[in-house]
Image (cartoon, rainbow, N blue to C red; front, side, top):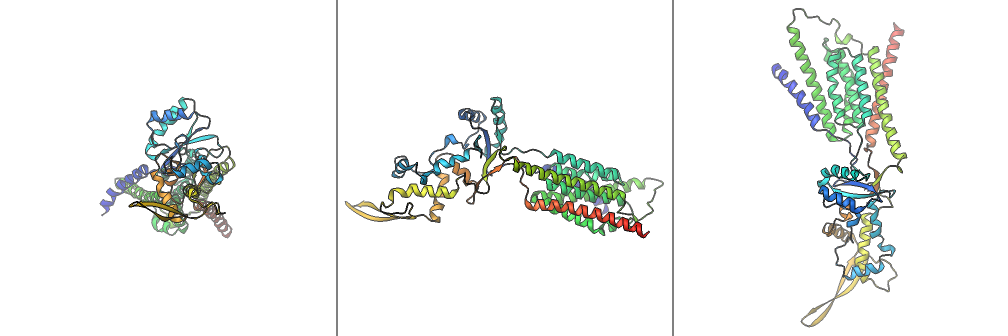
Length: 461
């Protein structure tokens, strides 16, 4: 059985690292599930942009220039004729207001919606546009948090400096570090810091008698471990699973290191033995204190960078590009309800009673005539503005004979709510923010507890 674990441990370690590599999760600013947004200055020639799209093979894009009446009626129909006579009326304002989806909030940029299937062609498209001296951007652009990577490097170097078994700890720190590299989120940085601290404790007690039992009795380490995994899961289920895989890789690494060390020890004629058992080793010495202090400082810096970057995104909303998205409703953007009202007005207006004082009747009743065997028969047709009518309008969006902006909205589902959102910031949930703050408080609490406990022991001595 021991032989099996000796062979399996390094294999599991390597496989775990490879899975972390292959399952990377990068922060994205993508605002739409089925579309990417490309934006150019509003004064840019639309024909030039379309020409670049054609050169890159981008098809089925949605732009302002290829929009028409979003209704499946013939131009010669009575409904469309009545609309053309009354299109300047406020009841028909939806047709013009929908154009807001083709501009950013400040109206400085014009937007093009490119299907997900064409996404790989966007880099070539942006390159060609820039070659034509047209500055452009996309909603999928986001910056890698290199400053957090530097902070984590400093944390690792500090722990290596204070570590008892430097080589053992240095290799154990590689997996948590790479975990953040391939999942560069602020909460993951805090999670990696906590796991690094646990590895530091293991390195301190390594190879001493009762090492494992002593570690299991350090309840604050269990708290740090649970907090690390919960913080990682707050970034998403996939990242959480990768954190569990990280635990497997660390356990496999330590077992592999132990096996190699035991093999080399058995080859020696003289083997030095550590006299003190693990239970007699102080886990509150200066190196532990400095380690907690350095990690607490790094964690505070990470959270400070997060809040500063969030604050800058809020304070500079007017200088950043705010694009339409599925967000909190904004009065500048029309919603599905506006589309339903507009469709009702078009379809019902020719049949409204001129004697009615209500501008929009929710129930329309009008006669229809049919001929049978030379006789004309009259029947009544009823139209009702209700959920059934809305559902039918919603379902007919797919049948529109052009790439309508309504198809983009429908791709987000019936609960779509049009609002504006910045494309260059990764959205961190409130739960993740709370956990990051808790991580700092836990580190500081343990640090101050160690200081107070050490001082009390000195007084009693």
